[in-house]
Length: 293
Image 1 (tube, helix red, strand yellow):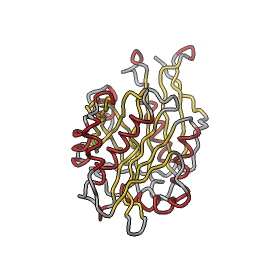
Image 2 (cartoon, one colour):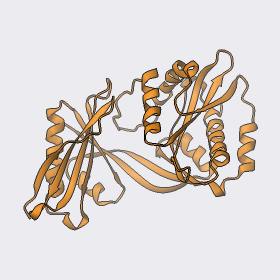
Image 3 (cartoon, rainbow, N blue to C red):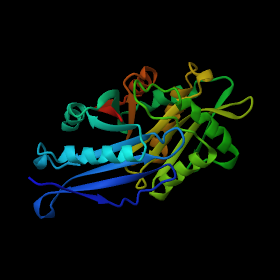
Image 4 (tube, rainbow, N blue to C red):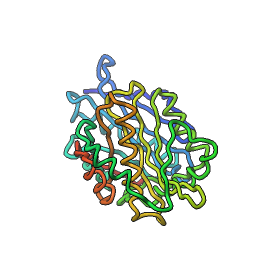
């Protein structure tokens, strides 16, 4: 079957990236597949491109995916990118496709869900009540308060050394403007960003954080965005403490919320242990692939 590729204009532009897009169509113009290539533009990530590719199940194995991939890879090279990344569920057609076309598997991610009706709230409150001398919990909704903005941006380096295996995420440089921009993006799509932090009482510095996005409807499942503790304060139970408080508030403030979703690198044993303790159950495994140009 003859396949035609049409390059599209994608309006998805942000301060840190933009996308290129292609539509694959068969005879008569029937859409059979698409590809989106996100080009990161922030310093530390501007060597990366991220690919999302889909082909209708009935149209697979006729070269459509290969043509879309070739167009996206060529565009990534023309844009000066050195690496293309992509994700696929384990044992899926995408997993086999990427492996066969030169991508290498660099990371395994475990996706999990916590059913809020099954949370042991008594045990949860006991974790929150445990003292952590020299630290306190603080939280806010939406954009970080001005008086916390700089120390919150500084605390984001807690994610710099999270387990990445062989995956290249680049280096994200966090500033006050960037943390505000992320919160503003969540707000503009109608969702709620809720942040819980661990604060060092001696100087008021934020040393750890956990973020949760709740749908605007306050129903369905919330999504954990990230949990991190600065290296010099690890081993004190702060991550567990913050996450327990975030779960408690999700249950108390959003009673119609059904669950919380999270994804964790298979190699991140400390965070997986926290998730297991709270009752998160694995839902599926996703594989991250890379192609060096």
